[in-house]
Length: 122
Image (cartoon, rainbow, N blue to C red; front, side):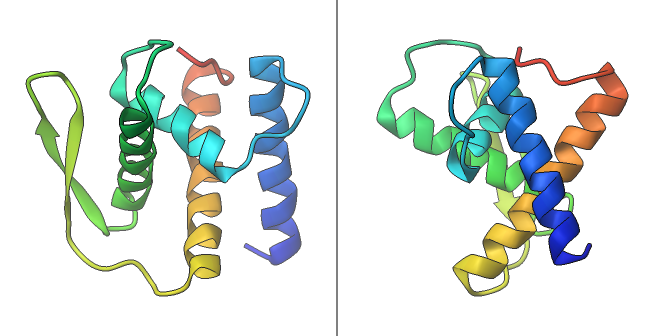
């Protein structure tokens, strides 16, 4: 994916999420990872603790990177939270990791759109 295409598709995802949440500003990567984490958890609540919010972003990262072979799904705990096993280390460098995550977020939303006919936060 060319840099301009990545930025264009990333902006499209940001607008999609912004409109879905009826917000005024575009969400950043952290906010979108949080939403993906909630989606992957499958439990919609309004009262996540700070630690749970961090855990949700971790779930999103692991879920996204599992499609690239960095993690594999290990199962759910007694509370229904998903857990992953790390298979290999992600490439070094924050910028490279963010680029990979943005590409995977774009793929995630494309898949949601094709499966569900659109994006809907559950």
